[in-house]
Image (cartoon, rainbow, N blue to C red; front, side, top):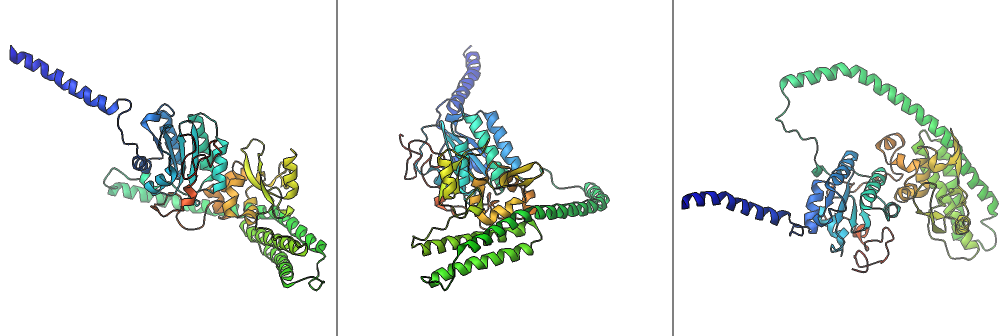
Length: 451
Protein backbone atom coordinates (compact mmCIF):
# COMPACT_ATOMS: atom_id res chain seq x y z
CA UNK A 1 0.00 0.00 0.00
CA UNK A 2 2.87 2.32 0.77
CA UNK A 3 4.47 1.46 -2.59
CA UNK A 4 1.30 2.40 -4.43
CA UNK A 5 1.12 5.77 -2.68
CA UNK A 6 4.84 6.37 -3.46
CA UNK A 7 4.23 5.54 -7.15
CA UNK A 8 1.25 7.87 -7.37
CA UNK A 9 3.11 10.71 -5.67
CA UNK A 10 6.09 10.64 -8.09
CA UNK A 11 4.25 12.21 -11.10
CA UNK A 12 2.79 14.83 -8.82
CA UNK A 13 6.25 15.64 -7.49
CA UNK A 14 7.68 15.93 -11.01
CA UNK A 15 4.84 18.19 -12.07
CA UNK A 16 5.39 20.38 -9.05
CA UNK A 17 9.11 20.69 -9.82
CA UNK A 18 8.36 21.47 -13.48
CA UNK A 19 5.82 24.12 -12.48
CA UNK A 20 8.37 25.69 -10.15
CA UNK A 21 10.98 25.82 -12.92
CA UNK A 22 8.55 27.35 -15.39
CA UNK A 23 7.39 29.88 -12.85
CA UNK A 24 10.98 30.87 -12.22
CA UNK A 25 11.75 31.23 -15.91
CA UNK A 26 8.64 33.02 -17.07
CA UNK A 27 7.32 34.87 -14.05
CA UNK A 28 7.06 38.65 -14.48
CA UNK A 29 10.12 40.36 -13.10
CA UNK A 30 12.28 37.25 -13.45
CA UNK A 31 15.96 38.04 -13.40
CA UNK A 32 16.56 37.76 -17.15
CA UNK A 33 19.81 39.18 -18.47
CA UNK A 34 18.93 42.58 -19.94
CA UNK A 35 22.38 44.11 -19.80
CA UNK A 36 23.82 46.08 -22.70
CA UNK A 37 25.90 43.03 -23.59
CA UNK A 38 22.77 40.88 -23.75
CA UNK A 39 20.98 43.45 -25.91
CA UNK A 40 23.99 43.61 -28.21
CA UNK A 41 24.07 39.82 -28.57
CA UNK A 42 20.40 39.85 -29.52
CA UNK A 43 20.87 42.66 -32.04
CA UNK A 44 23.74 40.84 -33.70
CA UNK A 45 21.26 38.05 -34.41
CA UNK A 46 18.32 40.23 -35.46
CA UNK A 47 17.37 43.89 -35.89
CA UNK A 48 14.74 44.22 -33.14
CA UNK A 49 15.10 43.65 -29.39
CA UNK A 50 12.25 44.03 -26.89
CA UNK A 51 13.10 44.00 -23.19
CA UNK A 52 10.89 41.54 -21.21
CA UNK A 53 9.73 44.46 -19.07
CA UNK A 54 8.67 46.45 -22.18
CA UNK A 55 6.62 43.82 -23.99
CA UNK A 56 3.47 45.85 -23.42
CA UNK A 57 4.92 48.49 -25.76
CA UNK A 58 5.55 46.21 -28.74
CA UNK A 59 4.05 42.76 -29.16
CA UNK A 60 6.08 39.82 -30.40
CA UNK A 61 4.10 39.80 -33.66
CA UNK A 62 4.74 43.50 -34.25
CA UNK A 63 8.42 43.06 -33.43
CA UNK A 64 8.67 40.20 -35.94
CA UNK A 65 6.97 42.32 -38.60
CA UNK A 66 9.37 45.18 -37.96
CA UNK A 67 12.37 42.85 -38.08
CA UNK A 68 11.22 41.30 -41.34
CA UNK A 69 10.82 44.74 -42.92
CA UNK A 70 14.36 45.72 -41.93
CA UNK A 71 15.87 42.46 -43.15
CA UNK A 72 14.04 42.70 -46.46
CA UNK A 73 15.50 46.17 -46.97
CA UNK A 74 19.03 44.87 -46.23
CA UNK A 75 19.87 47.87 -44.04
CA UNK A 76 21.82 48.07 -40.72
CA UNK A 77 18.94 49.42 -38.64
CA UNK A 78 18.81 48.32 -35.00
CA UNK A 79 15.73 48.86 -32.82
CA UNK A 80 15.63 48.34 -29.05
CA UNK A 81 12.53 48.75 -26.87
CA UNK A 82 13.39 49.24 -23.19
CA UNK A 83 11.46 50.08 -20.03
CA UNK A 84 11.44 53.64 -18.72
CA UNK A 85 13.68 52.84 -15.79
CA UNK A 86 16.48 51.30 -17.82
CA UNK A 87 19.92 52.78 -16.98
CA UNK A 88 20.72 55.45 -19.54
CA UNK A 89 24.25 56.70 -18.97
CA UNK A 90 26.27 56.32 -22.21
CA UNK A 91 23.69 53.84 -23.45
CA UNK A 92 24.10 54.53 -27.15
CA UNK A 93 27.90 54.52 -27.09
CA UNK A 94 28.04 51.39 -24.95
CA UNK A 95 25.53 49.56 -27.15
CA UNK A 96 27.43 50.52 -30.30
CA UNK A 97 30.68 49.29 -28.73
CA UNK A 98 29.07 46.03 -27.62
CA UNK A 99 27.53 45.20 -31.00
CA UNK A 100 30.58 46.33 -32.92
CA UNK A 101 28.45 46.85 -36.03
CA UNK A 102 28.21 50.09 -38.01
CA UNK A 103 24.60 51.20 -38.28
CA UNK A 104 21.64 53.29 -37.15
CA UNK A 105 20.44 52.57 -33.60
CA UNK A 106 16.96 53.59 -32.45
CA UNK A 107 15.87 53.15 -28.82
CA UNK A 108 12.35 53.46 -27.44
CA UNK A 109 12.73 54.06 -23.69
CA UNK A 110 9.40 54.13 -21.91
CA UNK A 111 7.41 56.70 -23.86
CA UNK A 112 10.49 58.45 -25.28
CA UNK A 113 12.51 57.77 -28.41
CA UNK A 114 15.90 58.75 -29.78
CA UNK A 115 18.49 57.43 -32.20
CA UNK A 116 22.19 57.58 -33.02
CA UNK A 117 24.08 56.52 -36.15
CA UNK A 118 27.53 56.15 -37.59
CA UNK A 119 28.10 59.06 -39.97
CA UNK A 120 28.79 56.62 -42.81
CA UNK A 121 25.19 55.40 -42.44
CA UNK A 122 23.29 58.62 -41.75
CA UNK A 123 24.30 62.22 -41.14
CA UNK A 124 23.60 63.92 -37.83
CA UNK A 125 21.12 66.29 -39.49
CA UNK A 126 19.19 63.48 -41.15
CA UNK A 127 19.06 61.48 -37.94
CA UNK A 128 17.80 64.43 -35.91
CA UNK A 129 15.13 65.23 -38.47
CA UNK A 130 13.95 61.61 -38.53
CA UNK A 131 13.67 61.46 -34.75
CA UNK A 132 11.80 64.74 -34.66
CA UNK A 133 9.36 63.55 -37.32
CA UNK A 134 8.10 60.65 -35.17
CA UNK A 135 8.02 62.42 -31.82
CA UNK A 136 4.90 61.85 -29.70
CA UNK A 137 3.58 58.75 -31.48
CA UNK A 138 2.63 55.51 -29.73
CA UNK A 139 5.28 52.80 -29.73
CA UNK A 140 3.97 50.71 -32.62
CA UNK A 141 3.34 53.66 -34.94
CA UNK A 142 6.51 55.45 -33.94
CA UNK A 143 8.80 52.50 -34.58
CA UNK A 144 7.06 51.62 -37.84
CA UNK A 145 7.23 55.20 -39.13
CA UNK A 146 10.84 55.63 -38.04
CA UNK A 147 11.78 52.36 -39.71
CA UNK A 148 10.08 53.22 -43.00
CA UNK A 149 11.67 56.68 -43.20
CA UNK A 150 15.08 55.48 -42.07
CA UNK A 151 15.20 52.64 -44.58
CA UNK A 152 14.48 55.10 -47.38
CA UNK A 153 17.28 57.47 -46.39
CA UNK A 154 20.10 55.48 -44.81
CA UNK A 155 23.11 53.78 -46.30
CA UNK A 156 24.90 50.51 -45.75
CA UNK A 157 23.85 46.89 -45.72
CA UNK A 158 22.56 44.44 -43.14
CA UNK A 159 25.20 42.61 -41.08
CA UNK A 160 25.94 39.05 -42.15
CA UNK A 161 25.19 37.79 -38.68
CA UNK A 162 21.47 38.30 -39.34
CA UNK A 163 21.58 35.34 -41.67
CA UNK A 164 22.18 34.84 -45.35
CA UNK A 165 21.50 32.31 -47.99
CA UNK A 166 23.03 29.37 -46.16
CA UNK A 167 21.55 26.05 -47.19
CA UNK A 168 20.67 23.25 -44.85
CA UNK A 169 21.62 20.65 -47.42
CA UNK A 170 24.99 19.21 -48.36
CA UNK A 171 25.30 20.73 -51.81
CA UNK A 172 23.70 20.42 -55.20
CA UNK A 173 23.39 17.06 -56.88
CA UNK A 174 24.99 16.38 -60.25
CA UNK A 175 21.59 16.20 -61.93
CA UNK A 176 20.57 19.51 -60.38
CA UNK A 177 23.82 21.10 -61.47
CA UNK A 178 23.40 19.94 -65.06
CA UNK A 179 19.80 21.14 -65.12
CA UNK A 180 20.81 24.52 -63.75
CA UNK A 181 23.58 24.95 -66.31
CA UNK A 182 21.23 24.00 -69.13
CA UNK A 183 18.68 26.56 -68.02
CA UNK A 184 21.34 29.24 -67.76
CA UNK A 185 22.71 28.50 -71.21
CA UNK A 186 19.23 28.52 -72.72
CA UNK A 187 18.48 31.87 -71.11
CA UNK A 188 21.86 33.39 -71.91
CA UNK A 189 21.05 34.75 -75.35
CA UNK A 190 17.82 36.36 -74.16
CA UNK A 191 19.49 37.82 -71.10
CA UNK A 192 22.28 39.31 -73.20
CA UNK A 193 19.77 40.96 -75.53
CA UNK A 194 17.83 42.28 -72.55
CA UNK A 195 20.98 43.77 -71.03
CA UNK A 196 21.82 45.53 -74.30
CA UNK A 197 18.32 46.99 -74.57
CA UNK A 198 18.40 48.09 -70.94
CA UNK A 199 21.79 49.71 -71.41
CA UNK A 200 20.65 51.62 -74.49
CA UNK A 201 17.51 52.78 -72.71
CA UNK A 202 19.53 53.91 -69.70
CA UNK A 203 21.92 55.87 -71.91
CA UNK A 204 19.00 57.56 -73.65
CA UNK A 205 17.41 58.45 -70.30
CA UNK A 206 20.69 59.88 -69.02
CA UNK A 207 21.14 62.00 -72.14
CA UNK A 208 17.61 63.35 -71.78
CA UNK A 209 18.18 64.05 -68.07
CA UNK A 210 21.44 65.87 -68.81
CA UNK A 211 19.79 68.09 -71.40
CA UNK A 212 17.05 69.05 -68.95
CA UNK A 213 19.64 69.64 -66.25
CA UNK A 214 21.82 71.68 -68.61
CA UNK A 215 19.16 74.40 -68.72
CA UNK A 216 19.28 74.83 -64.94
CA UNK A 217 23.08 74.75 -64.74
CA UNK A 218 23.41 77.29 -67.54
CA UNK A 219 21.09 79.56 -65.58
CA UNK A 220 23.38 79.17 -62.55
CA UNK A 221 26.49 79.96 -64.60
CA UNK A 222 24.84 82.98 -66.17
CA UNK A 223 23.69 84.28 -62.78
CA UNK A 224 27.21 83.96 -61.39
CA UNK A 225 28.64 85.76 -64.43
CA UNK A 226 26.20 88.61 -63.83
CA UNK A 227 27.37 88.81 -60.20
CA UNK A 228 30.94 89.21 -61.46
CA UNK A 229 29.85 91.96 -63.85
CA UNK A 230 28.09 93.87 -61.06
CA UNK A 231 31.04 93.52 -58.71
CA UNK A 232 32.83 96.65 -59.98
CA UNK A 233 36.15 95.52 -58.56
CA UNK A 234 39.47 96.31 -60.17
CA UNK A 235 42.63 94.60 -58.86
CA UNK A 236 44.52 97.90 -59.16
CA UNK A 237 41.93 100.08 -57.45
CA UNK A 238 42.96 102.05 -54.35
CA UNK A 239 42.73 99.95 -51.20
CA UNK A 240 42.93 96.60 -52.99
CA UNK A 241 45.38 94.21 -51.38
CA UNK A 242 46.74 90.78 -52.25
CA UNK A 243 43.99 88.95 -50.33
CA UNK A 244 41.27 90.78 -52.27
CA UNK A 245 42.98 90.09 -55.56
CA UNK A 246 43.28 86.42 -54.64
CA UNK A 247 39.56 86.23 -53.84
CA UNK A 248 38.75 87.87 -57.15
CA UNK A 249 41.02 85.53 -59.10
CA UNK A 250 39.45 82.49 -57.44
CA UNK A 251 35.99 83.73 -58.38
CA UNK A 252 37.03 84.26 -62.01
CA UNK A 253 38.69 80.85 -62.12
CA UNK A 254 35.56 79.23 -60.69
CA UNK A 255 33.45 80.85 -63.41
CA UNK A 256 35.71 79.60 -66.19
CA UNK A 257 35.98 76.14 -64.61
CA UNK A 258 32.21 75.83 -64.36
CA UNK A 259 31.78 76.71 -68.04
CA UNK A 260 34.47 74.27 -69.15
CA UNK A 261 33.18 71.39 -67.05
CA UNK A 262 29.61 71.91 -68.18
CA UNK A 263 30.76 71.93 -71.79
CA UNK A 264 32.50 68.60 -71.23
CA UNK A 265 29.62 66.94 -69.32
CA UNK A 266 28.28 63.71 -70.84
CA UNK A 267 26.23 62.33 -67.93
CA UNK A 268 24.14 63.89 -65.15
CA UNK A 269 26.77 63.00 -62.56
CA UNK A 270 29.30 65.16 -64.46
CA UNK A 271 27.33 68.19 -63.25
CA UNK A 272 28.45 67.89 -59.65
CA UNK A 273 31.93 69.41 -60.27
CA UNK A 274 30.21 72.31 -62.07
CA UNK A 275 28.07 73.33 -59.10
CA UNK A 276 31.00 72.69 -56.75
CA UNK A 277 32.97 75.27 -58.72
CA UNK A 278 30.09 77.76 -58.59
CA UNK A 279 29.74 77.28 -54.84
CA UNK A 280 33.47 77.94 -54.40
CA UNK A 281 33.22 81.04 -56.57
CA UNK A 282 30.33 82.53 -54.64
CA UNK A 283 32.13 81.99 -51.35
CA UNK A 284 35.18 83.79 -52.78
CA UNK A 285 32.95 86.73 -53.68
CA UNK A 286 31.53 86.75 -50.14
CA UNK A 287 35.07 86.91 -48.76
CA UNK A 288 35.99 89.69 -51.16
CA UNK A 289 32.93 91.73 -50.16
CA UNK A 290 33.80 91.35 -46.47
CA UNK A 291 37.40 92.49 -47.04
CA UNK A 292 36.32 95.54 -49.06
CA UNK A 293 33.80 96.54 -46.38
CA UNK A 294 36.25 95.82 -43.57
CA UNK A 295 33.90 93.27 -42.03
CA UNK A 296 34.89 89.97 -40.35
CA UNK A 297 35.40 87.22 -42.91
CA UNK A 298 32.38 84.93 -43.26
CA UNK A 299 32.54 81.33 -42.11
CA UNK A 300 32.35 78.67 -44.80
CA UNK A 301 28.72 77.65 -44.99
CA UNK A 302 26.63 75.86 -47.62
CA UNK A 303 24.58 77.97 -50.00
CA UNK A 304 20.94 78.85 -49.39
CA UNK A 305 18.91 75.63 -49.53
CA UNK A 306 15.98 77.25 -51.31
CA UNK A 307 18.07 78.56 -54.20
CA UNK A 308 21.88 78.30 -54.29
CA UNK A 309 21.96 81.40 -56.49
CA UNK A 310 21.10 83.37 -53.34
CA UNK A 311 24.69 82.79 -52.26
CA UNK A 312 26.20 81.40 -49.04
CA UNK A 313 23.79 80.90 -46.15
CA UNK A 314 24.07 83.02 -43.03
CA UNK A 315 22.17 80.80 -40.58
CA UNK A 316 20.04 77.68 -40.20
CA UNK A 317 16.26 77.87 -39.96
CA UNK A 318 13.50 75.38 -39.27
CA UNK A 319 11.38 74.73 -42.34
CA UNK A 320 8.57 72.25 -42.95
CA UNK A 321 7.81 71.28 -46.56
CA UNK A 322 4.17 70.58 -47.47
CA UNK A 323 3.27 67.16 -46.11
CA UNK A 324 6.77 66.64 -44.68
CA UNK A 325 8.61 66.79 -41.38
CA UNK A 326 10.42 69.86 -39.99
CA UNK A 327 14.12 70.06 -40.71
CA UNK A 328 16.97 72.55 -40.27
CA UNK A 329 18.10 74.08 -43.56
CA UNK A 330 20.77 76.66 -44.39
CA UNK A 331 19.23 79.95 -45.49
CA UNK A 332 20.35 83.29 -46.86
CA UNK A 333 19.54 86.49 -44.95
CA UNK A 334 16.52 87.31 -47.13
CA UNK A 335 14.90 83.88 -46.75
CA UNK A 336 15.67 83.85 -43.03
CA UNK A 337 13.69 87.09 -42.72
CA UNK A 338 10.82 85.69 -44.79
CA UNK A 339 10.56 82.58 -42.64
CA UNK A 340 10.73 84.61 -39.43
CA UNK A 341 7.86 86.76 -40.72
CA UNK A 342 5.77 83.69 -41.53
CA UNK A 343 6.18 84.11 -45.30
CA UNK A 344 7.27 81.55 -47.87
CA UNK A 345 10.91 81.49 -48.97
CA UNK A 346 11.88 82.13 -52.60
CA UNK A 347 12.26 78.57 -53.87
CA UNK A 348 14.18 77.50 -56.96
CA UNK A 349 11.68 75.91 -59.32
CA UNK A 350 12.48 74.04 -62.52
CA UNK A 351 10.48 72.78 -65.48
CA UNK A 352 9.02 69.27 -65.29
CA UNK A 353 6.43 67.29 -67.23
CA UNK A 354 3.93 68.46 -64.62
CA UNK A 355 4.81 72.14 -64.70
CA UNK A 356 7.17 74.15 -62.52
CA UNK A 357 8.24 72.31 -59.37
CA UNK A 358 10.83 72.83 -56.58
CA UNK A 359 14.10 71.19 -57.59
CA UNK A 360 13.77 68.57 -54.84
CA UNK A 361 10.53 67.35 -56.42
CA UNK A 362 11.66 67.57 -60.04
CA UNK A 363 13.38 64.25 -60.70
CA UNK A 364 16.51 62.22 -60.06
CA UNK A 365 18.87 64.19 -62.32
CA UNK A 366 18.97 67.04 -59.79
CA UNK A 367 20.87 64.91 -57.26
CA UNK A 368 24.31 65.64 -58.78
CA UNK A 369 23.34 69.32 -59.15
CA UNK A 370 22.36 69.57 -55.45
CA UNK A 371 25.28 67.38 -54.35
CA UNK A 372 27.80 69.83 -55.77
CA UNK A 373 26.29 72.65 -53.76
CA UNK A 374 25.58 70.91 -50.47
CA UNK A 375 27.93 67.93 -50.29
CA UNK A 376 27.17 64.33 -49.35
CA UNK A 377 27.21 64.78 -45.56
CA UNK A 378 24.58 67.53 -45.42
CA UNK A 379 22.27 66.52 -48.23
CA UNK A 380 20.43 63.52 -46.68
CA UNK A 381 19.04 65.58 -43.81
CA UNK A 382 17.93 68.36 -46.12
CA UNK A 383 16.15 66.08 -48.57
CA UNK A 384 14.66 63.51 -46.20
CA UNK A 385 11.07 62.78 -47.15
CA UNK A 386 11.30 64.49 -50.55
CA UNK A 387 11.02 62.81 -53.94
CA UNK A 388 14.67 63.41 -54.72
CA UNK A 389 15.83 62.27 -51.28
CA UNK A 390 13.92 58.98 -51.58
CA UNK A 391 15.32 58.32 -55.04
CA UNK A 392 18.90 58.99 -54.00
CA UNK A 393 18.73 56.35 -51.28
CA UNK A 394 18.22 53.52 -53.79
CA UNK A 395 20.91 51.37 -55.47
CA UNK A 396 19.26 52.07 -58.83
CA UNK A 397 19.91 55.77 -58.41
CA UNK A 398 23.60 55.16 -57.69
CA UNK A 399 23.88 53.01 -60.81
CA UNK A 400 22.27 55.66 -63.02
CA UNK A 401 23.55 58.90 -61.53
CA UNK A 402 26.65 57.98 -59.55
CA UNK A 403 27.35 58.13 -55.83
CA UNK A 404 28.40 60.72 -53.32
CA UNK A 405 25.38 63.05 -53.26
CA UNK A 406 24.16 61.97 -49.83
CA UNK A 407 24.06 58.25 -50.47
CA UNK A 408 26.75 57.76 -47.86
CA UNK A 409 29.54 56.53 -50.10
CA UNK A 410 33.13 57.36 -49.41
CA UNK A 411 35.21 54.60 -47.90
CA UNK A 412 35.83 53.45 -44.37
CA UNK A 413 33.41 51.14 -42.61
CA UNK A 414 30.05 51.03 -44.32
CA UNK A 415 26.77 50.29 -42.60
CA UNK A 416 26.61 46.67 -41.50
CA UNK A 417 30.37 46.21 -41.38
CA UNK A 418 31.96 44.93 -38.19
CA UNK A 419 34.18 47.72 -36.88
CA UNK A 420 34.25 46.73 -33.23
CA UNK A 421 35.03 49.79 -31.14
CA UNK A 422 36.55 51.62 -34.11
CA UNK A 423 33.87 54.30 -34.43
CA UNK A 424 33.51 58.01 -33.84
CA UNK A 425 32.25 58.39 -30.28
CA UNK A 426 30.88 61.80 -31.23
CA UNK A 427 28.28 60.13 -33.44
CA UNK A 428 26.86 58.36 -30.39
CA UNK A 429 27.44 60.97 -27.69
CA UNK A 430 25.06 63.39 -26.04
CA UNK A 431 22.06 62.81 -23.88
CA UNK A 432 19.02 60.79 -24.86
CA UNK A 433 16.75 63.35 -26.42
CA UNK A 434 19.48 65.49 -27.99
CA UNK A 435 18.53 64.02 -31.35
CA UNK A 436 14.84 64.69 -31.09
CA UNK A 437 14.36 67.64 -28.79
CA UNK A 438 13.05 65.84 -25.69
CA UNK A 439 12.46 68.06 -22.73
CA UNK A 440 14.81 67.57 -19.86
CA UNK A 441 18.00 67.92 -21.81
CA UNK A 442 20.57 65.85 -20.06
CA UNK A 443 24.23 65.65 -20.64
CA UNK A 444 27.31 63.75 -19.93
CA UNK A 445 26.02 60.87 -21.99
CA UNK A 446 22.76 60.56 -20.03
CA UNK A 447 19.36 60.15 -21.59
CA UNK A 448 18.07 63.30 -19.96
CA UNK A 449 17.15 64.86 -16.68
CA UNK A 450 14.60 63.73 -14.21
CA UNK A 451 15.69 60.14 -13.66
